[in-house]
Length: 190
Image (spheres, rainbow, N blue to C red):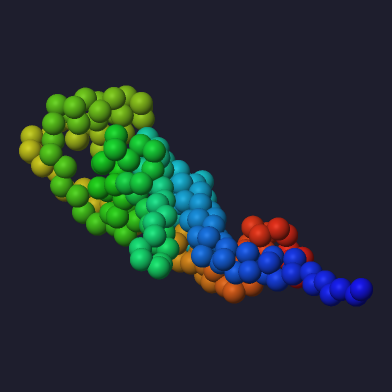
């Protein structure tokens, strides 16, 4: 008696790999988002390479801690949200989120002069060994100040640089295929 046998192992692996495409795309988008968030945090801290000649002075670190990401499914699409107000301290410090845009693009703010601000100004005056601008803030009679803030491009420069890698490295057909192959049993799925 003779028999016929067929091995469908390769076909099953390919089918499993095809089923993994949406999840593979999500995994690659998450990796891209994580890379961008890491670079944004470094940029906000003033340690990252600047695409401009200026370096931003570092502050409390609240801006850096407010940066995060969220990955969400919207219908058949996967959406990555990257920015301020998404990090671990986002609920604690809304001021960082509020001023993130003006720190990036520049602009003018009008803070209210409070006793707390005047105390901070005296503290800075003594810490800087007599910087007169802090003394002027501490002694002002104005209820509101006008403060110009130069743009540092801490967000824009990183985003524009990283965006060039989105399709070339993370979300092109080969990258998604490679991830799907790894998820379904290795790159040699026949």
